[in-house]
Image: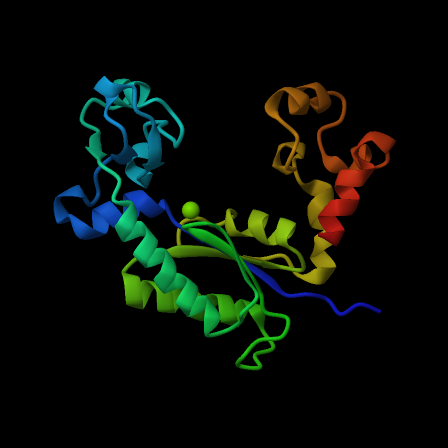
Length: 221
Ligand SMILES: [Mg+2]
């Protein structure tokens, strides 16, 4: 029998926007986006949580963001700073495992099934990593812990910001069953809408041949 894997997904909270708020006290507590200016057809690369309350999100045209919030602060991206922080958090990950798979500057999967400190609890490792990140970078990250990458990534989004969520091995199957179909990768909004009636969750869908592979991938990946 295969040993159950312990996977952590770490995701920095509103990364670029949080870095700008960290480095410029006047930006703190304010709606802010990192990205191109509204006059130059720019787009939002990251939005602070204060900006998200106005319905602003990444990939939105900066002009639209500005219309939603006229006092929105636009910060220019400083990728060299983000890259340095990204390297720092990867160094933190490597204290626990070399099995690190970065997805972007601000998120990565860690396989801690076997880890350098011989720790049995992946949740405890995730908590320690969050504490190290906060102490060493003055930024927060959210963590998801589960048996595979698919579920760990979903888990990290459950309690954002500065959250931690565990989907334990025995919870994996019931968790997928009750998961809204939109959460599955590869199912776009149009497809999801078509699927919503009469089937709203993955469980009955999983019995239909069309989506059985997605179900299977979710538990295996
Ligand atoms: Mg992030």
